[in-house]
Length: 230
Image (tube, rainbow, N blue to C red; front, side, top):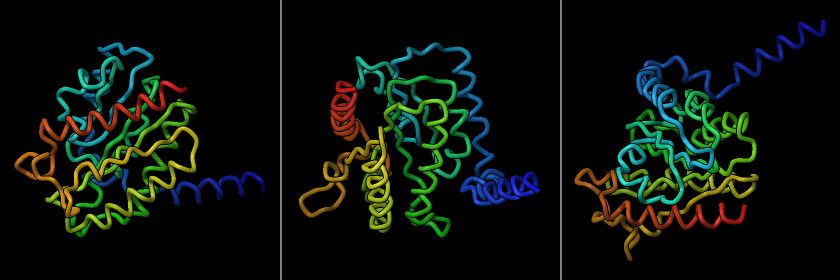
């Protein structure tokens, strides 16, 4: 009888998992090659235990000066273009488990873009919690930073929903141990509260060198604030 109850409870937990609805989707499985590239790097490279991992979508992948910008912190760069929390959560164990880090910084900005497939802010939060749960299995005390989704002209029409997602994650971080929210939006908005296009490439989505310079200062200041007091 107890065994039957245990099996039933396990099935309920699995069926309620936020990953179940995503893990077999073609658009999620399509990233398998990118994850395998990360695994190949893990087998080939050796990273210091005090490294800070930067993980997420294309803004992480395209940060060509990340190593120099974050010095003296050694870094591990794990970004792939188009990443969403819905696929990142599925692959989180393969991305994070091979590493022991002094900190982890995550930026993923493609779950709310103005598409009919957009997730709700609440779904974004649920998926972020799933990523954190995976990280905490092997790194229970490692500081994890969520870099706020940036306001951009290309996605301005859904900025209110993006703000809601950012705010939900901020509230979650504020009430959780060793989770931190890095607020960036005000640095990318002009006096009228509109995105400063000069910080972005022609697509008005990805940061240019000036945008990365702004990001660098905000992010590194927060890393310094937390890590130097840990």
